[in-house]
Image (cartoon, rainbow, N blue to C red):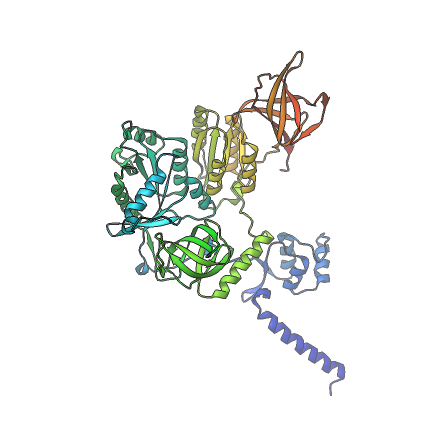
Length: 616
């Protein structure tokens, strides 16, 4: 007969075994796979988390960590290398956690059969310089191809609409221009299939025209040039072709690949020809989708309406969207209650490339958010809540942007190029720098310059670099504080040079994986010159107002005039009234004199900087 304590021991053992079986049936706590002992590593794991997954006590893991020279508590986090050493000692292998999120399109693959794919309409964005006729063209297309069947025309319209020509449809995104186009690309929304760039025949290529071309090229989509205002007496389409050919946009009748269509949006001339060219390009691109599946697509715009709640304009990219479908969109979710097209007509079904206005989402999504429909309503809520929670905790922080220091480590095998945006003080300098950089080819890695232009670094440059994962290279130009803050918040690196050879050396070193600077420049503050005083035996003193940061005595100083560096040297004195001071903060006035430089004018920007030592 068993003794009492032996019976109790058996009972406790059975209880533990049942509990252990129940725990191993829970996928979240499972740490051993069928292949063997595997520890799934998650970022920021604490000591106690590792102990649970290794099946040992907290005391045991702390003892093992002490043996490795790591002094810690059970609630502190430990790095992956340390976890791997402990795991290997216990016979475990270690694998990184694979986070899957059905709303992340870069992790989703749809295996559509070739026989299920049908031709879908092209999605077109119109861009160009201000006053060149973008809005007039969109209005002309909308009223002639959409409103012709509506009595009295259209008084309201959504952010996108479809037109029909010869039985084929085209979808137009009615956006403010290339800024909105690139903002959506920066959010990962590659919506546009074709870009129409409007250029006025009497005005020619302008700065925003060049920006629009840069953005379209960066997106890698076909370009159609609409030469507008040909009805004007001073119109010169051939001059427009010549200017664009210098930018690499060569017309088809000159042996190039870019279609040019002469139109007059105001007089409704050439609109049919332009739409036919769009149809032709879309057929060449062979755009296809599978309508026999749950819908996926992108948000164009969204707003909160007092009467209808959250109203969202979306474009269906694949599948078919129906009334009652459950969808998750960014960090929100809902069920489609109503759908209407560009004429405000209620519809029940939306096919691929069709723009529609829907209601039913719980919160207002952002432009560029992707949506996906699911069969299970509960799953859409769980995904949206999980994304919101992860974003709050910082797990959905913006992915790290390209950096010269980390280029070689983090570049993927297929991404064998360093993308640059170059801004400089003169066109000649820019061309010399661009040509030198584009000749660099180290072990298959090369430089791709997506924009090179004269002038200060602007918000548009940062937006383009953000969307294209590029680095901004400034030569003898400086960003203002607002642009610098935007670049910092977007994770875009700006590197500034005043010697061409130094810039080339850094890029070559980055492509070789050998870049290791010992110092980096830190801008401490900027001040604007409000008055200039000429003082004998001292020189010029700039009466300045500190607009950003702090001006520190003995700092390096740059004099900027209209965003271009005209002098770089040392600060000789910093005063408040008649007293020498160590620093002057934002919002205060001061007197600044620059060593060996007296040509300071009212409106100049004085930028204080210093070199900070960084770890190799």
